[in-house]
Image (cartoon, rainbow, N blue to C red; front, side, top):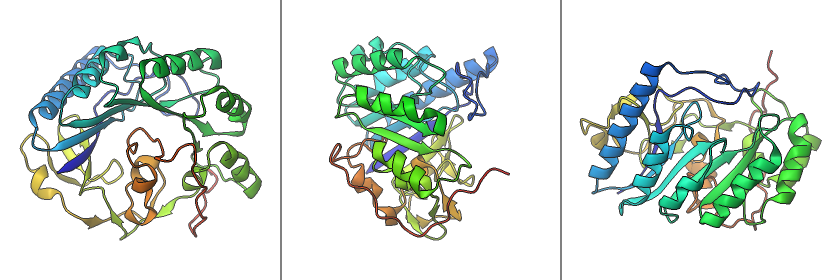
Length: 299
């Protein structure tokens, strides 16, 4: 059995203050940090012990995980387990990356995001260059806001051609055809992000070969459906895995809709689903537009 796990513990603190993020410059109290560390240690122990399943792990903390030593330690240790195909974390790349020299580059990977106004572009690019030197797979992303366009273009020009630059549609922003075309020049797959995907009653890998896990071990189909289907630590998750349709009207986040079966994005990102790297990059075709609701302006 192959299983992808999206893990999110209680950590919610971040060193950046992006205006589009609700966790900007949040500080976690010491007791929450201790709880997050204990939860991650428990999860890493479970991964190490669950050798009858081929596992892939994506850490999706609300805050920035790599400024915390326990996330770096988990990335390194899990990367060396023979039954772990991939271990990935979403990060703003603010922390130094030399620790990844201890990780197995065949398994460790990063989903990185560049936040203009929070970090100097040259500094971010130096981090990327170091990742390339270490042989670590990584993607780079930006939020598609007008004020980010100049920096995003400069970033794309400076990155190696083999590094995928993705663009996330800004929450609540409506893109006209010209804007969509502009961002698609940077990310040929931007069309998947710019409009929500109708998902109600449509088949999804979530809950079958991909699950979401909270710090206490509660298992859900995905981050966007609150109904629990079991717990990691009592084994009840095993009998809960099965094909099931989505219960939400739409899905508009990449870590959700990448698992929607009708979209076929697991094939597009084969071998790089969790780190968001297309299989054929840089030879990727633009998606054919499909009928779906466009993003509405924030009231």
